[in-house]
Length: 253
Length: 317
Image (cartoon, rainbow over all chains, first blue to last red; front, top):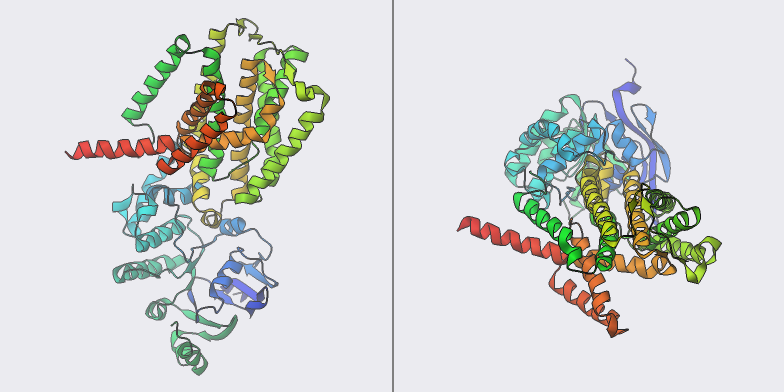
């Protein structure tokens, strides 16, 4: 077996400098296919910047990014999503003036095609509704189908966002703090969901809830000040004195 | 969801249509036609502002230039009105493609400034180009015979032609909003970053919306030229760009009938307070401030919210 093919995502010396400071510095990250990989670290460690670089929402200052052995360093963000690497956002990203059903359907529409058809009635999209209902069921939201997404509670919005992301059936998911602001029941629901969907997918997530990280992740990378401080299983990482110090030294976590 | 077309909306639309059919016997037809032309202009503008979230401040270039092309084709080339109008629409769409392609790379106030800059350039062209006849404009454009046999010189015939074009255009614009494309457009308006992360190349959607909006603004301009037999600098002036923003905001952005209602309101004020001279703009300003303070969602938006509340109250009782 080729070693390279084991990794779905690989970055080499990824660096992002903003005016006056380096948010991400020489990060070489490898994410094993069909694993759950967590990115943790104190606030301002560069986790979200890493996400933005991987999904091309930011252009790296230097370094390269590979997805499925393909160099995507200079790809457009929408193109990266079409290749099969889809992200969620830290601030719940829903389409607030669309209904819950339409939110998920917009994602399904992208795979269906025909999204430039401005002369056809949107009733032809009703054929996607069964799929939408299946996806909403997986996040326990079948009761909210016709509500406007903007009216939902924070936790429900996050769940909707995950359902929308899943609608694309991506090979790789990047979840930016999927549990933030969720009630404890929702955390359990979403953790179970992440576990379930990880069966034939790769998941890279940023998460502050260390219980969730411990339970779900196969591998953890700890970032501090834009650099990878440690990498390994939860056991290995949590026994690393540098990691302990980084966390104790930070009042945020 | 059943979509926009509930029973009550259907009934209201039918009543409006009946009213429009008998209106020329009650009101001066040319005034009605002017209202319909601006209603179409505002509805086309609303496609961009209300459903794509893009505030253009240069739509006068599409409106005014289509009028010039229609006037030139009708007067100098002597073609039938349908071809002259089509020429205006195609010109506006092409102009929309060119300017939109550059403008959509910016958002918010910068988008507005880029569109304004293009409109000012086109205004300069309108002053300098020989075929527009500068300050005089193109006057005395023949109304001609539609398809060669329908005499549009007859005011009533022309009115029903304008009404037909307006209703068909409004239906089509509504279809665009309620289409697979319209769904993605609304998603982009709500959250552009998220739409990108779902794999949509958002600029293409914005560009298509921009071109469609430009084309229908052009249709409005061509129709206005057909009605007034005139294409002038006033239509390409930035004042027209501002007026269409005003109409759309007054009536209510993102609603089907809102911009049309706003357009009729503004045209009425201009007509009936014409004697007031310079005071027209003051009265307009006053009404605008009043509406913005009182009806946050525009006249139609606020009205429909109020009706919704009323009906749901009745339903519960």
